[in-house]
Image (cartoon, rainbow, N blue to C red; front, side, top):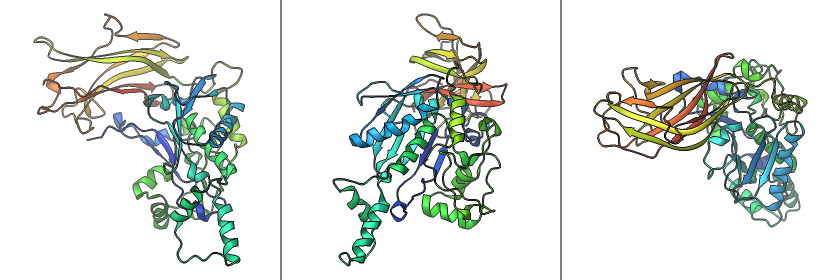
Length: 441
C-alpha cells in the first residue's frame, strides 16, 4: 500500500563538509513527489528546468513572511537577494510581518534544517502553519575565514589541536557575538531556493546534458556525503526530465539552478563549479515564463486554482442509495487554456495508507476511490455545492469499501489536471483531507 505523503519539495542538505572548504559547494538537492502516484505517474516527469503547471500567475504579488529565526541583518539580506528575481520576472515578492495570517510562502531561518523549498504554487497546498522554505543559517557562515584564522593561530603556536572535532568547531563559531557571513554563497543559495519557489527545477536534469558516471564509487560517495542509498541516487541524480519541461531551452551549466559537479561524477570528466549568480539563461527563462508587458506567457499551460474550500460533507446512504456521498464545497477558476480535471476522493486508513482496491471498479491508481471528470472552459469560474445546491457528488458504494473492523478512515480530496494537448497528465492542483470518520460498509 502507498502511504499518503504529499511532497513536492526540493531540498539542499546540511553543512557537514562546509567548514573544510574555502568555497563550498551547494549541498546536493533532492526532489520527492510521494503519495501521489495515480495511474502510475512517473515522478521523474516532475523534474527539469521549470514546471509550468506550478508557475504563479504572470504579474502576481506573492506574499512572503518569515516564520521564526534570523537576525534583522539576515532577513534583510534574504529579501535583498530574493528580490533580484523581480528584475527579470513579472512578479512581486511582498514580504510581510511574521504575524500575517495568510501568505503564499513562509521562510524559516534556522540551523540544522538544510536548504529546501516547495516548487512554485505547490506552496499554496501547504498549511498556513507550515514553512514552505528552509534556509539553513549555519550554512551561511564564512567557514573559510575562521579556518584561515585557526591556521594563523596554529602557525603562531598559540593554538594546539589534539583532536579535530568539526561539530565543536562549528558550535564555537555559532556562539560568537559577531559572526562573519559568506554573503556571496548565501546569495547563491537564496537565489537558488527562490528559483524553486518560482517554479524552477534543477538544471542538471536537462535531457542528455550530462554523461553520469554510475560507478560504485560514486554511489558510495553520495551515501557517505549525503546519506543516500542507490535508489535515491538513481532517482535524484541520474534521472533526466521530460523534454517538455526544458521549455525549448538549451542546457545551461552556469544556471543558478545547477549544483556543482565533480569531474569524477561524469564519464568524460565534465565538471561544473558552484554558481552564485543568475546566468543569462536564468534571466531569459524566467522572463519568458513571467513576461513583463504581457498578460500571459507564451509558455502558459492549462492550470486551475481552487479556493474557499469550506468543508467536505460526507453523507451516509439510505436503503435505496447504498453508499456514501462526498460533497466538497469550493470554488475553482481556470486560466486562459482549456483544461480537463478530475475531482478525486480516496480512502486513507488510520496509519496514513491508501486502501488497496481489488476489483478495479472504484479506484484511482489502484486504490479505493471515486472520481468525476470535468472539462473547464478557458477563464471560467465555478462554485460547487454552495448553499443548498448540490452540483458535484462523489459517490462510493458500500460494496467497494473493505471491512474496516471498526477503524476510522480519512477521505482525501484532490483536484487533478490532465493537459491532453501537451501530453502531460496527472498534475496535482489541490489537496485536502477530512478529519477521521467512521464509515458503514
